[in-house]
Amino acid sequence: MGLTHICGKSRLIMDLLELGQRIDNREAKLGVIGLGYVGLPVACLFADAGFAVLGVEIKIERMEKINAGISPIDGQEPGLADLLIEVVTGGQFQATADYEGLRNCDVVIIDVETPVDDDHKPPYDALRNVLKRLGPVLKEGALVIVESTIAPGTMDRVVRPLLEGASGKRMNEGFYLGHCPERVMPGKLLSNLRGVSRVCGGMTPQTAESMIALYRHIVEADLDPADCVTAELVKTAENAYRDVNIAFANEVALVCEAVGGDAWKVRELVNKSPGRHMLWPGAGVGGHCIPKDPWLLIANVGDYFEPCMIPAARTINDGMPLHVVDLTVRALREAGVDIAETKVAVLGYAYLENSDDNRNSPSEVLVRRLQELGAKVSIHDPYVFGYGGDPQEMIRGCDAVVVMVAHDDYKGADITEWRECAGRPILIDGRGVFSVGQAQEAGWDYWALGKKT
Ligand code: SAJ
Image (tube, rainbow, N blue to C red):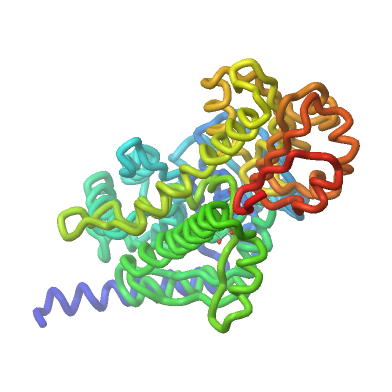
């Protein structure tokens, strides 16, 4: 091993040891770039743990709300609004739109969106922009941690060269680099950040150890050291795993429709078999993670092999809202009605039960297709802004009612009263909310995903 290399290695170790001490005694100054549903709670938790935190947010209105102690995040996020007020008024946390303030930061955490394009590839526009603006102000010896979900290989082939180019520094000399993928869920942001284990992927083992020392201040669960590729693989694979398993449940549901089974009953009994954990079939897979992360997992493998199962699962899940449309068309046709002259009430517009989040909602796909077929569609959702009110008013006079989300409000509804409001007794159940007996007893011509009715 050459002297330079030994000096370089000892320099790295010395730098990270010194950084580790500043982290341990909370002297290290933290920067968080991107104050969305991940960055904002991360910034608040580190500020609450005693660090001085500077948040960088390019959306001025969002930045100003945060500095006024007002959480810009919609929906119920237990504890976040109070924590934000506390750390802002306590002076531990402030937001800015200016990268200059990051010059004093020993640690910079990056939390920006990483969508995929129509070719299912991540352009990383936001991430590239952040790295180009961070480079010139990056403090000597700073630790940069990407928390955004990224395709395996991105840290080494995108983040590292961009940051070295923009900063004029070399990794493991002028700065240190790691990837700690977020594992938050809307509605449970703070509890997930505190209670769910994290993979701390460092470009060197020493970097991973420094990351563990940092996250130990806010995470009560396991902090697992790894290299960056492992961290990239774990996050994208865990969500691809979920997507593939949902697709399996959906394909079993279609089999049940074809042969006369009940997919919910089948799932319950399958899961009595040791080692089986079949998920729930449904009218589609929405949200900000599951539809995207499988594509990130396979984004950089095309030169090596052609994945088939993961894309096939995406095709199955993306097809489920359209399958519910087919059920609706068939039900109306059997009642002697062409969908083009009908009124259809769609109950549920969020992507997830009891949530107001409608990102990538399967209901959007269903509504668009029904309208293309000529139906007049009304939408209800007790949580999504603009679609509240009494569902019976949406149902009144309709030719078909389609339930797309298993909100508790629907599970507890009196569907006999719904029937009395409806123009025709056609009920399409996309989430197994009702039983065949319950629906037919209430006088409905009941059609359900995953059930032969
Ligand atoms: N869905 C099904 N069948 C299922 C489960 C979900 O059709 O059995 C549908 C849902 O209706 C929804 C979509 O899939 O439209 C996604 O649901 P989700 O329960 O996976 O919720 P998400 O999108 O919030 O996923 C998050 C992810 N968490 C992170 O990325 C940190 C995911 O890894 C978690 O597994 C998931 O929450 C969770 O377990 O709640």
